[in-house]
Picture 1 (cartoon, rainbow, N blue to C red):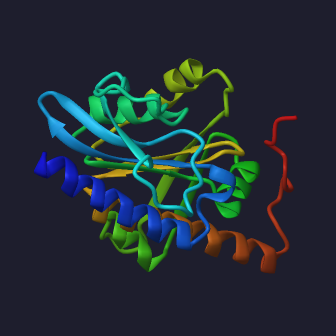
Picture 2: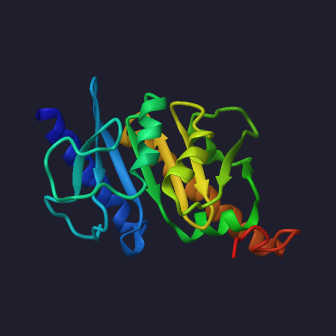
Picture 3: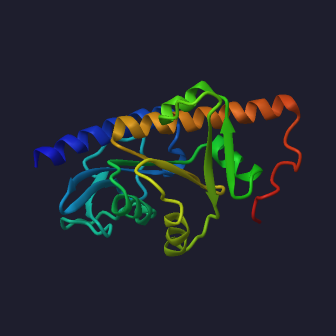
Length: 214
């Protein structure tokens, strides 16, 4: 019970930090934190909640299949399935999914992945080589969550990582809440820098919205 309370407080504090950056517009996004390994349980945001508010109903405890452990009227976030894939396939301790203007625009400029390079902040992703680059996969935003989950799962390749969903947002996972937040901040900085640089340079060769689906 102590661990559950501790993780609840940690996730609540993290939600406040990300809310202050306006990374959860219009109740969007979802976050989770692992509570136990055996059996696997994690806290995840409840569906449809205003994340600018702090209430006793912000999160619920779910199992490895994303099913509530305790009797509750709350529903897990719609994309909880993506979190279950990460926790079942990796040793990650935290998953963050946010919708920002920058991470949505990026997915309109590139087809299946975006590669960013030569930025000091890439070291926040534990990549230390000089002139290092990072590639983030981009998948389609399937409305049918199980179909989205199948595509998403193909790109879970390690205990830390990130996946962009076109016109939807980014999902980042890491060792714990500190590590995952650091990684999310790094990705968002890289997206913002890249888009600002493109605007100065006059855009990308193929033009914006080339990969936007109508």
